[in-house]
Amino acid sequence: MGITLFARKNDEKDADEFWKNREKELGMPVIKKTLAQVQTEKNGVPIWGILYFTEKALYFQTFKSDNWLALILSSNSGKDGRTKDETVEIPFENLRKFELRPKKNGFFNRIFRQPDIVDMEWIKSPITEELAVMTFETEGNIAEFISLMPDN
Image (cartoon, rainbow, N blue to C red; front, side, top):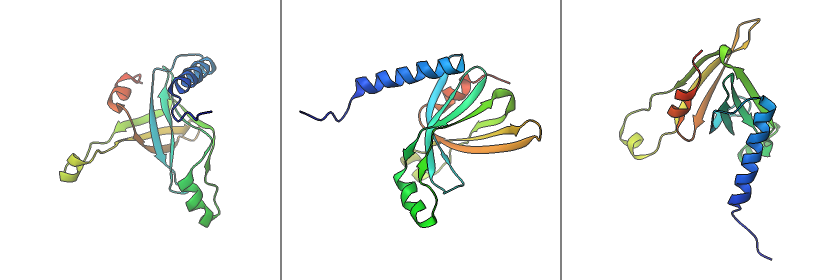
């Protein structure tokens, strides 16, 4: 009996099924998605998730996992190092800023790949006009992602 290290076909099937179910839950198609990480203030450890949008809202979804770095850092601080299933939904009418930061120039920045960084700001509570902010490092073509987002 052998062990399969890379089960690409099953992973692809699982991903397709996940997105079909997600679109059914949302009641509309997901237009674009990308892998992203956000730096949390809780423990200073980045949380990976999927950044995606429909015609009505932007989402950042994380999944339950044990983050080994967070577990190490949190063991000293008494905080939990696990991420959880969580989805932040931001209706486009509440989104105030979603901007790609310009990349820095310089010798090392030309040699080493710089991640795309996006700054996001939205109205967390329309009643109090309280603002929330997140900064993401993203994978993939974030410029294309932004270009496909609806203008509001």
